Image (cartoon, rainbow, N blue to C red; front, side, top):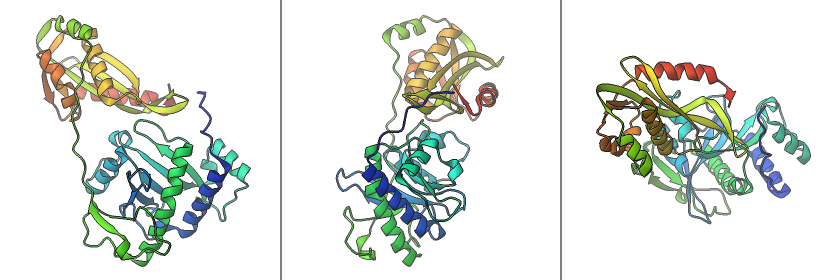
Length: 350
């Protein structure tokens, strides 16, 4: 069995405060009147950082308060404004949030049980009533929160709870509003129940993505340029998360990222490269392609990719090597190999 790092330490005062807020969330049951798309904006009173709060549980499966931060803002806005594929690995790639989930006791990790026991915590009722605090970052499995993240919970949970009390009295709050138009709370809550005048509605738009391209080392570029060009050859390339295959980095579980290069006409795999998802997508894709081409020993005439984000990453490199980069709706040779690898590693820890 892999050895995990112990959870980050939290002060007793912080832990007891978190449990009190979790009990308040469980008693309020905001998922009975709020939907996960009923978003509320929060401005950090110290840093000025924007976060978005939401409640899960309207579907009757996951009962939680979630706070999206940094890259997670793009993720949640895409979720409510588009129709994403729930099976897509992009669902994992962009997750960046803090979540307080109420779960059955049997779903608690042993570290959670130890903390609850040490605090003498026993929630009223049965079922999904046990609090579990987690942080999610792109490419990583959910993990225990740090002291800093716990303090963010202490800042954001009271504001989300205050908003839920208000929303219960104003169920038509979001009517006639665009999905990405969000009410923002005051940075500092008033010492009274919220009113309509306290909310500031703002359209929250997705910031433009600045494309980055991979640059190999001068030594690698020299070796790539010396590869013979194979006229008419078409290769397929993909670099993606492999959710079923995970590994341990820094004592924490993270997803695996796999790069595959295949020769289209015969379906031969020319190169494979496995990274932890802690490696940036651009670096994993670039290194995977470089290794695959060097392993193949030739430069193809065309390279097909199906993921739109790969094109700007690889375009300058392919142009320099006089390889025509082609977007494709599917990659038959790679899809078959990827399915086989997904089944092989399903639920595994490398």
